[in-house]
Structures are given as structure tokens and as C-alpha cells.
Amino acid sequence: MSVVPDEKAAVATTGVRAEALHFALRNGKLLAGLTVLVVLLVLGLFGPMVAAADPNAYVGPQFAPPSGEHWFGTTIFGQDIFTQFIHGLRATFLVGLLGGGIAAVIGMAIGFTAGYRGGIVDEILNMLTNIVLVLPALAVLLVINAYLGIRSIPVQAVFIGLTSWPWVARAIRAQTFSLRSREFVDLARLSGVRPWRIMTREIAPNMSSYLFMAFILLFGGSVLIGASLDFIGLGPTDSISLGLMLNNAARYNALHLGMWWWFIPPGLGITAVVGSLYVMNVGLDEVFNPKLREM
Figure 1 (cartoon, rainbow, N blue to C red):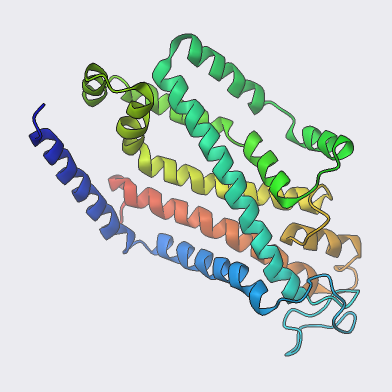
Figure 2: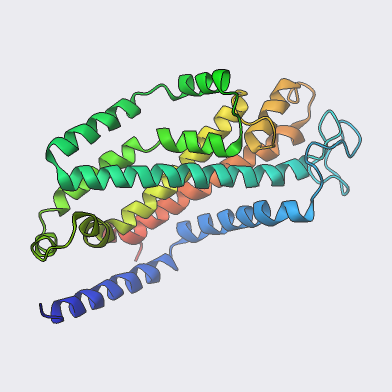
């Protein structure tokens, strides 16, 4: 085989990446979302190291509003809300990363396999996707809590990942169907390349931008699902999270008592994380889609 086509492909790929980087560094939505996300991520990763106190410890006066000593005030029990907030951010990012990562891996594996193989394999995987798609996730979690009694952040993230992948699998399957008949795929197939290598080295790189944006959406979706489960009391009870902070604030009538500092920080934290991810996704869409770029 001649190396000239490979060299041309490498040059073309490098040019596309350079062009994408050029527009990414000039996209306001992408930079704004990324900045907010990085600030929250750094706060969630390193904040608990600075404020190493137990987030559920009684460290101050009850009902205290924000002050120099307690930046976000205290709860009805005298717990420092800022300490709970930074520990909750870490839990939020952990759920998003694990849940979104698991969903992305499963969705990509099933989508690529179904789209490339076709036939009976596609029918079986498509049936599995439809089953999970209509699965009552909340009811399953209730059963898990009732019979297994396992309520931890990793378990919650795994559950979210195992139930969030169907839409990704469907989208990747559709795109793989259109790519598997391209010339470069036929050439790799005639060269004796194994199917899995074709899917990972020939088809996947041509969908890299979409795969990255899909992971961002899965990340944000996992954060929202985790916060929702925590808020209705189905999340972990042995740790703190932003959703659990909202649950405690609602349970102890923070709104009725005028303790706005108890529920506004976690609500804004969840909104900021998910909002920054979706703004980043819009920016990336403009970067990768020439028709949407702001010249």
C-alpha cells in the first residue's frame, strides 16, 4: 500500500484540528462555560483539602446568616454551609464523571457494534436499547434501595450510567450505518483489519467531535439525575451532596424560615455546573459546525 494517502490523511487531520483549535480559542460560549466549570472543579477538588472539617459537624451558631466567619452561613443545626457546599461539589462532579463515563462507554460500544455489524446483531442490540429506554429508572432505584440497602455515590453513579446510554447508542448507530459504507472503511476491511479496530480507528475518529459533545451532555444529565434523586431522598445518606443540601433545606423549612443562604448556594451550584456544560456544548457545536461559526 502507498504511504502517500496516509500522509495526506495525516496532514488533513492536523489541519482540521488546528482549525478547530483556532475557532475554539475565539468562541465566547465555549470559553465562558469552560471557565465556570474549571473554577467549580478546582473548588470541588481542592476546597475540601482546605476546609477539611466534617461537613456535618456542628461548628457554629444556629440560623447564622453569611458572615466573615461562615461565608455561606450555617444551617438550623449550626453546620457550616460553605463546607457542605464544597464537599457537595466534589460529589456532584464524581456522579457526573462516573455516570456520564459509564453511559458513554456502553452507548458507544453498543452503537458502534450495532451500526457496523447490522443484521441479527443490530436487531438484538436495538431491542436491548429499547428495553432500557422504557425502563422505569426511578422504580428500579426504589427496588434497589428497598432490597439491597446500598446508597452510596459510586452506586448511584453506576446506576445512572447503566440507564442513561440508550439515546447515545441510537445516535451513534445511525451515524455508523452511514460511515460503514465509505471507501476508507471498505479499504480497511479488504486489508484484513479486524472489525473492532475498524470501529475504533476508522469510524470513531470521524465522529470524535460528536462523541465528545455527547459525553458532555451525559455528564450534565448525570449531574441533574443525581441531584434529583438526592432531593427526593433516594440518594446517599452517608455523605453530602448539593442535592442532599436542597433536601435538608426543604425538609427543615428553610424557605419558610427565611434561610435563603441554605438553599440558594446548592441550587446555584447545580445550575452553574449543568449550565456551563450546556453552554460549552453549544460553543463546541459552533466550533465543529462551519455553518454555525461566528466569523
